[in-house]
Image 1 (tube, helix red, strand yellow):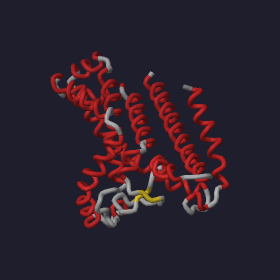
Image 2 (cartoon, helix red, strand yellow):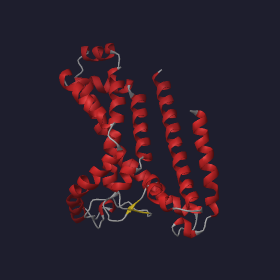
Image 3 (tube, helix red, strand yellow):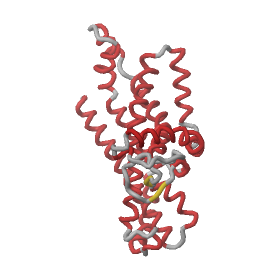
Image 4 (cartoon, helix red, strand yellow):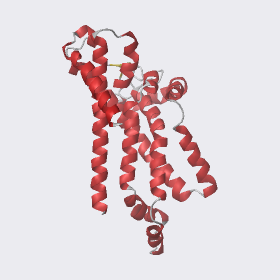
Amino acid sequence: MVLALAGVAVFLTAEGLPAIGAPADDMGGASSLVAYIWPLLFGTLLSAVIALLIAAPLSLGVALVISHYAPRRLSKPVGYLIDLLAAVPSVVYGLWGLAFLGPFLGDLYAWLAKYLGFIPLFEGPASDTGRTILTAGVVLAIMALPIITAICREVFTQTPSLHQEAALALGATRWEMIRMAVLPYARSGIISALMLGLGRALGETMAVAMVLSANRIITFDLISTLSPSTIAANIANGFPEATGLGVNVLIASGLVLFVITFAVNFAARAIVARSDRKVS
């Protein structure tokens, strides 16, 4: 695995370096490689953050229901259904977001632009098709939800029963027991689950490429007809027609995504290690 990762890193670096001196025609009119990649990096991070903000509370809630609230005859089927969501191909999520979720959210976006347009996030003009960065974030959240839920559920069920029984014996309610015994024990596992979900959102390609009506711009407007693109979606859309240095430019953007993903994983490991030291 180390050799494979090293090979990927060497390939991306060797093929991406020529893009530094690429002309503007090969970079979509951008004045430099940084000016080309920065809007894509912004869209990648924005969509991933939206997905994590939606998926994190839902995943934790579902995991707690399965592990501590729902009766066994109900928790097992629900757990199986959540696990099955991880097996759905991303192109299916993309088709669902394009054909159903986007048009379904179109009326909501129009309402947000009309009544909450004074907030920069909903400034508009609202997209009629629903192909916005917010729709892409919702699709990514649904794709990350089974990963986060499955890991959190396993961590919650591994909490020592003596800790839970002691809290209940002292008069704690079920929620107080979860807050004082289960969540502190599962802190490092929750962080790991969230980082894995974030990694899924950062690297997703086809679903975002199908759902997002993307442009290489920087904007915080979540419902506008002009939405920022992501690195992965830009590579998928641009690679078939790219030639010469244009291919190197796309590979250079892939190198940036590779580095960002590694940084996220290293940060997650550092946070988990610090949490483990505090617990011990």
